[in-house]
Length: 304
Image 1 (tube, rainbow, N blue to C red):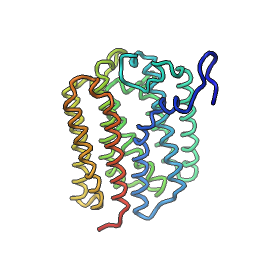
Image 2: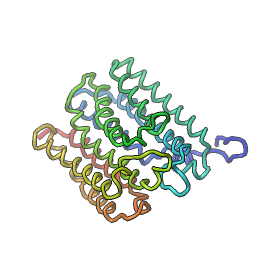
Image 3: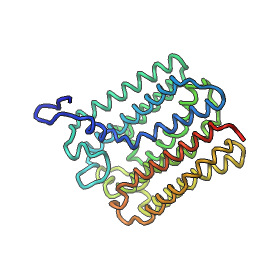
């Protein structure tokens, strides 16, 4: 068991797992699996490259989670009264410097994987990697902190939707195509829904540091309406893609996750205070995961 800083208890794996927020890491796993599945369905797939892409994506998201904790704590957004973050800093479980350095370590690991993939698969991986590193650090990191300029929803949609799916596809296929980006759109809607649920919950607290989020700008009822729109759009895009012939028919399997989305919808609809939304980020992550895995399976099944 590694020792902590002087005067502090030893650090455990459970502490670091809490800091990284494992339940949220499906946000990076699903798009990598989806992009790889689209390539595999086209006859282009190398298992080792999938493993590297997954490790790189999870590492950069883990870094983003740690940086978000660090900067939100330093900026006064996360307090004992708020519900956001992993809680390791506001409860004194870990020290700010530890969390920041761990974020740098995960980012370095992701960069190393990205540089290797660039060497073996091509320069586009480097471009996507730079965008990912920038997005991970400056989500809450100063001086940009784009989350608090109401740009977090759009950035997360792009980073964990089209860019990550396309990146995983390119790692396998070494070409840029429209199809994986179209498949990425519904997944991007649902990963944005995870963030948006968090931000609805944090509406009373996110103004403390002088910033704002989309949820705070819209207010509780407006933010709820946007969440509903994201959920409906995800399923509508799949159904529309199948009817238009853009998506393979088995992609409609993703619709089987609709009861989970309906349950999330009902819980958010019933919420009257931020406390009512405390655990709904986990529920939103579950919708994203099941939807995404069903979509991956649908892409991989023989066409009908």
